[in-house]
Image 1 (cartoon, protein in one colour):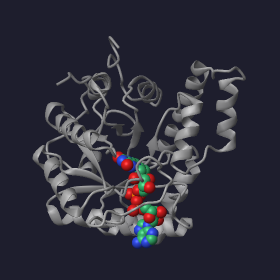
Image 2 (tube, rainbow, N blue to C red; image 1 turned 120 degrees about the vertical axis):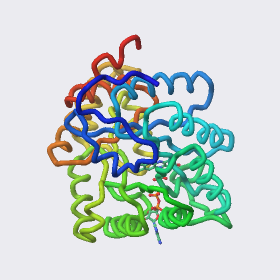
Image 3 (cartoon, protein in one colour; image 1 turned 30 degrees about the horizontal axis):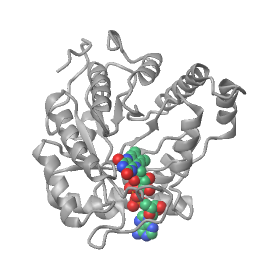
Image 4 (tube, protein in one colour; image 1 turned 30 degrees about the vertical axis):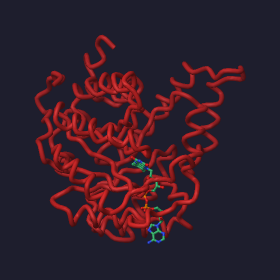
Length: 324
Ligand SMILES: Cc1cc2nc3c(=O)[nH]c(=O)nc-3n(C[C@H](O)[C@H](O)[C@H](O)COP(=O)(O)OP(=O)(O)OC[C@H]3O[C@@H](n4cnc5c(N)ncnc54)[C@H](O)[C@@H]3O)c2cc1C
């Protein structure tokens, strides 16, 4: 366990707590925050992950989440490491679970494996086709076709707390924003307690999604809608990531990042990083003023860039990065 930065109002997570309960705990900063990690592929990546985990643990995030990969050995490692996050740290752990290439029996087994590690918070996702996220989605013959079914399945298996994905620009496979909102509302009605959004660049897209859910179903609209954030540190990766998720970088943002990247053969990473942190800070401050329940940072298993944003929005990161 890592010593927390000591503040009077910080409360540590309790075992078995749900994300929604946790978001209501007192916190010292302007807003609760959470951090997303991905499963490491080898020992070096695993060491990097744990360095980041221990740094964030000192800042007492509301929760951390572990994404769910496509390959077999990665999957075993994911379950093991999510279990270690839950049992060997003070962090409330959310495990992502996808329907890709799984029968219902396998999905039941995975939920049980997480429960054995004390993980009761799951993010239920359909997942993307392995290899080409924009390619054709093929349902496992004995699996489920949509995240909504996974939410129901998990609900039948015990006392779990389920979150789902949401999409400020609309999911790329949804025919229009109304259909996309309808799907999110169905997932929430099926028992999801909150949603976490895909990363976005235009805060207005997030606010419009929030309005659409509230208009479609005020009860579901009252559930936490948690914005997914990421400080950009490379323009090339930001372009690749948005392309793979079927979303877009708005022209004004692209222009700021491209200017920082410069015209050289290699992008100017230091300047792009500075602009990326500015953009993420500006969006975070606006979202805080709009009363969001939490900011969810996709860390890519690094702590520094996210910590800089956290510090700039008024979260106490004192000493957390010492020795890094
Ligand atoms: C916060 C977050 C975390 C993520 N974590 C992971 C992860 O860990 N691992 C991973 O592989 N991927 C992850 N993803 C990516 C996600 O799996 C993909 O974006 C996927 O394409 C959609 O997943 P979903 O759960 O929203 O699917 P769904 O809600 O099932 O929706 C998929 C599509 O089907 C449509 N649809 C739903 N129901 C119906 C119906 N009855 N009839 C017709 N159309 C329908 C929806 O409108 C949508 O276009 C994450 C995404 C987000 C936002």
